[in-house]
Image (cartoon, rainbow, N blue to C red; front, side):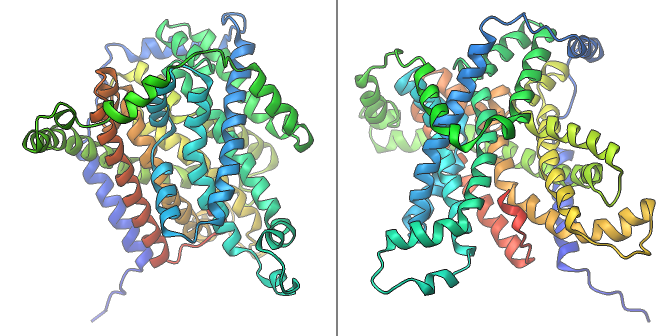
Length: 493
């Protein structure tokens, strides 16, 4: 009798996640509700190929504001993140960083909007706060993995500050600088999206043009946005950084006034649960909490997890399709150039903007969110895996064509691909929650509704649940990566 070998832990994990995603997809709302999506698609396509660069008033100012928010927010996040990274050995610091990075920057913007209004402080802090938690985690990991040998050569009595500045920093500075550049790219995307809540960035003009059906204007704005990101390596030079930061601080409209009394009222009254604020007693509070959990938190959490699992697995499948586009093991130079262009566009388009576009095309359902999350994250991981194949060596007699892909390349990149996929699981969860602002019934939908109704106590409770959900997913992801030994230096990209 033939005994079948036990499937590997890698295969069992893959099968389990695919099964969960299929089960979630069965119960997902993926219907197309627009009457004639092809007509709208044709209009969008026509606008895409006929960009109108003169349709938007003050487009230069919008680009400048987008860069200013990103530069100041990421610079502040780097300072705070480095300080927190040095204290990352503390459980309190690690927990605090996990909480602040678990809340999406758009949620932070909605919170600060109630305190500071449409002032520059809202945009800068909305980027700086969550990014500082992300940067602290990554910098702490870089410091932990740095070579400890130089520390053994320093003289006795050397202060910790001197040892860090003159011994540790030179060793890790290249990694810090590389990650800061990537985080700035993310900051520019976040800054653009902040325009959807009213801040004067590119997103504000994009939303207006979309709603008015001015797709030629939309095309021009997106092209300018892609050019800004694509040319980052050219204009972002270290000697110019102080000039950029001074210029960014100078051009933002700091004259927008906000009331200190509104800040105090928001922090001491508005976010306090209504039954406690009105003195209705603990029984009324428990009734309020029960209503919030049953009517909003539970359905919002189910939809968020459902969408996250579908997008996570779909991202994995799309990565398998996309990474060959830039792999030197599989394609020639001309084909790889086209692949690079496609992946740059796909990963540079914020998933929020992509989902917004698809919602206009297909109507409100999970389908636009699934496609947006999958395309954005699949392009990011596909790019990293494709670059990873540049370090893979094949035998001279290796197979060619599809056999090379299936039997030589894919088995070698599958493990690091899963590492990256699970590493971004938390990110996909954050993005899934925020897409509820567009009308998809995730936790973000109920958060946005609470802010719109000025029920800030409800909004803060739901944001707290969103943060706990993200922290839980991050813990599960780390556990899975550890159990499967999915370790790769690509995780920090």
